[in-house]
Length: 344
Image (cartoon, rainbow, N blue to C red):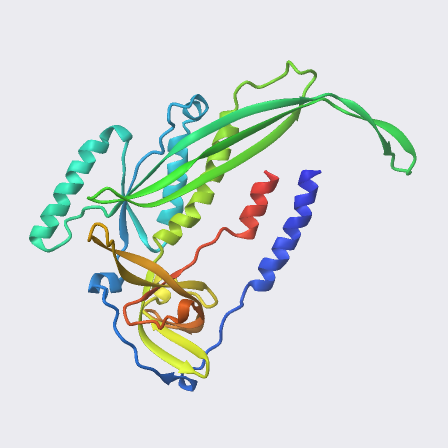
């Protein structure tokens, strides 16, 4: 019943996706007047504007000595999935994958590289971030359903008695979190939980016909968890487009950014607008710089290889964008992907 229900739902998902495809914002630039654009306090560097890829080290997700996870080698398969998904994007360069045992030695090299980079004033190949995580719970459970008789109809529409065979149902669930640490400080820059399950069932003769292990099902749950964790990671590492021109027409505002076709700008994509602000702790006197979401917009039809125009949909707290503020394309898990998870 569950499968039939979601097949119907997926047809609705498909129709929705098809109806949205090709949507975008048409824009005629000369209709908009140039407006003053102040500079942000935190202007991007040339390398940031050029959009150099972030260098990332991938480490296995810790199985946490959970037997179910260890038998299925869950940590390795999950980080491999995340590695593949991120490598396909425009913003991340996977510089290496390492074993947990080499973590200390690796960190020493990265810190040394960072210090040398500061002395020379140039990049000597050090990584920017480490991605890792841990599994907090991994389960594999089964339940037995007795065979039973039920009323059905034959091909002529006549009522008859049918028999449903006994079935053994299996479910595996994987729970934990993904973390991103900045190098060389090892400051936690990002954390996101995951929790996914996979199910299957089979006909059996009795309750004794049970599979005590199914590492394939456990890995399937882990891969679903890794897939759902990839979307917030993509948003964290998303390519930035820096704002450098502002135009207005009546109550509509448009922004020109450095995010062009070469780095993934597509008509109709939703973006979030960010600004870097300084936050001073009055208790400690320390100041930190934080990115805040100041608005949302849509990429218009005006896209070149190295630039794009954004139609501002909303600005929060009446904030006015500044030169040096930036946009990110928002990656969300598709309805299709969500639907497939529910029927698997």
